Every structure is written in structure tokens, then in C-alpha cells.
Image (tube, rainbow, N blue to C red; front, side, top):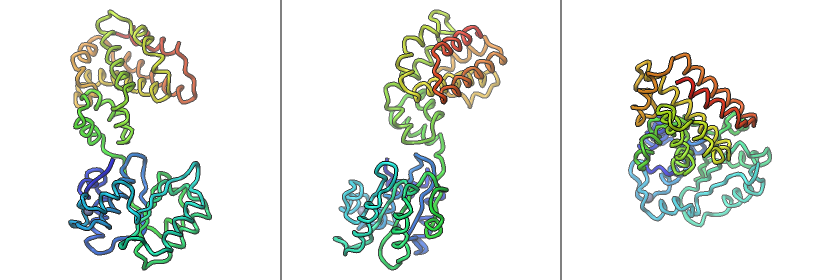
Length: 332
Ligand SMILES: [Zn+2]
């Protein structure tokens, strides 16, 4: 997911946008940056925006026009002055860095700055790091580098000391929710997903994934079933269990949503309506909250958290799910 201006970066990463635009204003753009932070925090898209800002033929206060030949080629990853490296397998291979340095030693095909962006820079081995360090020690060239990492502590200290580090923070849940809503995702789904993950990329993947939407539907049906007492939650779950047990992510997502829903009932009882996740289920949540004691809600949540913890150790006991659901039903 691209970003097209520094204002847009500022929505997600206020400090990063401020630092970069300030250095531009003060004419103190750094030649080497480390973009550090968790997955899904716009590090890579910000790096490419930076490249566009440097190469755009028609920039406006360091904002690229996003339309010129240079901007378009950077978006398409075809600009000869922008190099993008990511690990092949577990490490960034020595040859990858060698080729990069080779490119820099030649005169560039096109004039203007050259930018290299290295993804997962913590996966550089010692030799590659040293080769790279040499280029960092040769200033004066119109070369810019951005090293991206989720494991800042694994970067070599010598690399860290030669670059300016910018910290990317987890994105605000509300921004993810708004984004999903704008994509036409139903409020229920947008809410559940933004509660589940603050990684924008996986949130979008979730929202597009048919299975995830079905899981959200199943969770609301289970609680409706408990209220109406027509179909037992155990039966409802059995119909979809094959799908859910297909992957750890699905099972984990299912349990997490079951817990959110339980918490919603609790929030309703405590009149914390602002914290409710399944907003569209308010009617069911209200009715359920009248039928259960706080103690039983807590018991259910503890049960579900226990199952969630066991998932991590690959203990995926279908019987335990049946038991949890039966217990849930009895509580109401
Ligand atoms: Zn442009």
C-alpha cells in the first residue's frame, strides 16, 4: 500500500513525517536512514515516497507529484536509480550487495540521486554489512540509503551509528478501521479486524479473505444461537470446524472474536458502550447481558484464553472446543 505525500505519512507516523520534512526544510536531508518498527507500519512505502521526493521532476515542498515519468517509474519499481533489495531466503546474499556496490561504482544511466532501499537489513551478514559500510563512509556522492528492519537490535552497531534511525510505531486501530470502512467493508467486520490486528497489511488481507468473514459470521451466529436456544453452538461450530482448524490463524482469529464478543457482553453490563466491538449485534448483546452473571462471563473468557494459549503449543483438541462451547451455552 503506497503513500503519496508526507501529510499522508503523518497520519500514520507523525514523528517520522515531521522529522523528514523538517530536515528537508533545513536542508539537512540525511543520506542514510534506518526505518525501524513492527510489520505493517508503512516503512517500505515511506522509503519509496522518500525516493520519489528525491527524484520527482516537479516536487512541491518535498512532496512528489506522483505523475511525472520518474514518480511513475518508482511506483512501478522500474526506475534505474532506485535499488530495492530484500533477502533471498534467510540472508541477504553477498552477491546481492556486491551487485549493488558495482552499480554505484559505475556512472549512473540517468542523472540525479541514487537511492537504495534494503528490506530486512538485519539479515545482512557480516561481510555484506562491511561492504555496505564502506559506501556509507564515502560521502559526497549523490547516494541515499534506507535500511528497513523489524529487529533493530540485530543490526550491527557500526551500521546504526552511521545512519539516522526513525522509529515507526504501531498504527492507531481507528485508522485501520476507517480505512476498512472506506473500502466498503461492513462495520462489524472492520471493527473485529481492527481489534484483532494493528498491522494494516494483514488487516486488509483479512478483510479480503473469505474465510475471515465467514468466521466473523459464525461467531455472531453462535451467540445468536445461544440467545434463541434453537441451534446449539456446538452444532454450529461443527459445521464450520473443518474450515477453522485448517490453519492456526483461523483458529486463533475465531477464539479471539469469541472472547471479544464475551467482553462486549461484559462491557454492556458495565455500561462501557464505547468499548463494544460488535456494534451491529447490540440488540443480541443487550439481551445476553441480561441473562448472565459477571462471574460466568469471566469463567467463559478464562476458558477461551486457555484454549488460545494451548493453540500455540499445537494442542488442537476438538473436544476442548466442544466443551468450551457447551459451557458457554450453559452460562446463559
Ligand atoms: Zn513526480
